[in-house]
Length: 216
Image 1: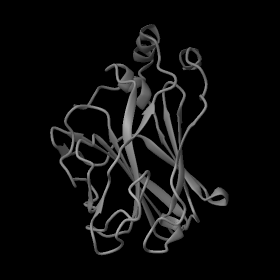
Image 2: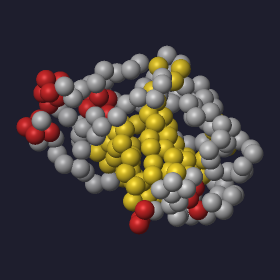
Image 3: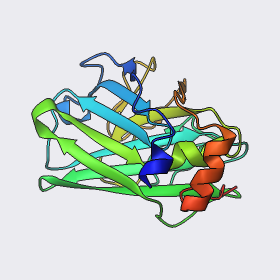
């Protein structure tokens, strides 16, 4: 494994995406996105979401990814949250931080429907710095097989019930209406993989059992 992974460079400089502090209608600091940091190492993708004040009691967090043609319809996500403007999502990550711990669900949209939770996304929590990190193992390698060099994405915070809106969205949407109303994403952010393996490295990954089949 070491011989294979050593053929790609280490983690590159992160891309930073900022969101205004306090641009939420509900006053829940644990749902107030301040910044998102994304980087990769040529194999895995790392997404760090920072909040105004991370709370280990009830916060819910989502990531929508659009990388392939097709994907979901509008306002269609496996958590049934009321967020429009994200049609075409191929991958959905959802995490909740309850009781001081957290889990992550990873869904894929195949042929217009969401698969049951699967995948190998990981979650780590940095309470001291009000942030958590999703690690998507192997996604950069997998997408490189299909000549995909980056992803469109959206980050959102929400509550614990189906039909809840996004309380905060990364980017320029402004303040969302708040509980009991819908929410809308108006712009995707884009991340370009900084370290994409060369074809010869991909062949070695395949021998090592690292590569994954495209799901669409």
